Figure: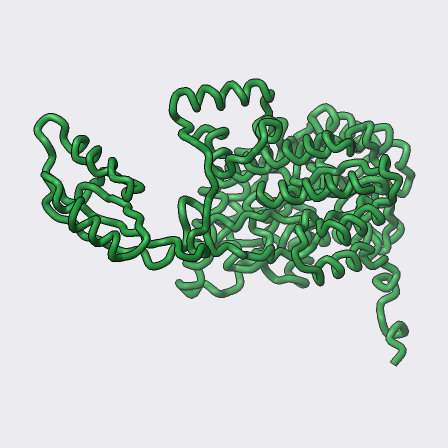
Length: 158
Length: 387
């Protein structure tokens, strides 16, 4: 993987100067690379990694398996686009395996998410079935261990 | 009881490590970011740990042969050939030891007699001087200089040689400076070593961590193989410090002597570690590469940041330390480190812990995550601004 993208995906708050030292390149080149990646839509944005586990009233998240009927011309794309247009939906993936779409839905309460699934998702044309799983606890999110208070256990030797 | 009447005089006369006191303070403080640690922050690669676990599950818990498992010696021989073009017969010229440390100890003991002079350069790792004294031999310290990139020069070596000189201990890539020796430096040193008929122990424990080209071993310089013992190990290359496994390679006459001593004082290196090490040598090249790339990024960040702060920092090309000069602050190395620790909770090591000539420098280990390094560097910056 591109080293610049790897570094930014770990910590988007690196300054250009820090990136230039880390990568052994000039600040100008780093700036140009970042601008290009933004222009190409490879870098979509910058935001904080939040440990929602420790935030009060942060709502509920459900992981939904959907079986759907692919359309003649567009395959799964059209239905995936309809699913992702709901603002309750935070991620949509096309899957290989026993179901077709994996959908992550966020809401304030279990009732709210349930009613969204029952009234909107399941009711869509082409949806054969859904299975909803509520997330109970997050241990690691997107590469970040959320309860990471690990101490440096190394001893001081020379 | 008056214990000093019962204890060994030579050991009593070995100076206790001055830095221990400082380390004790650090270990009692909370929230300290320690850039004082001399070991990888990476865990041993999983497949290597798994090989150790498998050996335990299969009940392979017996002693190994004195010199180490035959297939481990073969893998070591193949590895150093592939990496450094060193050729050693696995049956007679390789010895597996408890860390590089044991190999160093027994190599020195097998070579020197009381009264011999042992040449060693500083700043360097701290064990060469006491181990030499334990043999009743005399350490002769050569100070290396920042303006020579902390390389031992042929002239410096030549001028320290006396008729009593017998052994030179070389330690590159160097802890604490990060200095390395290039082929031309080694050739110049080899010429002096051969002319004065010296033996060399070359401690190459950081040989896999070089950032400006591949490591060159002095044993590959013509005429040197027959008079060199190369010490290496698994701790730094494979992040296996706690497994305590190293090795020595050299002419079979010296290795046979060392094996005799090893047999009496150690018997054999830990079996579980040897199984893990075989896996590391066979399938660990990618792990080394990954860790080296990570260290290299950190190295550039740390060195660049120190220079930007106005603490001039010699560019280290090996190991995982940098050695900035702090003379511009007007503080001694120990004052600098103690004040930094108490006011900003960042631990680094005073340069004089590695020899008197390290005064005016501090050792900063970049063997820690970028996240921690960034925080520590910004605290050091604040510290300098408040001075």
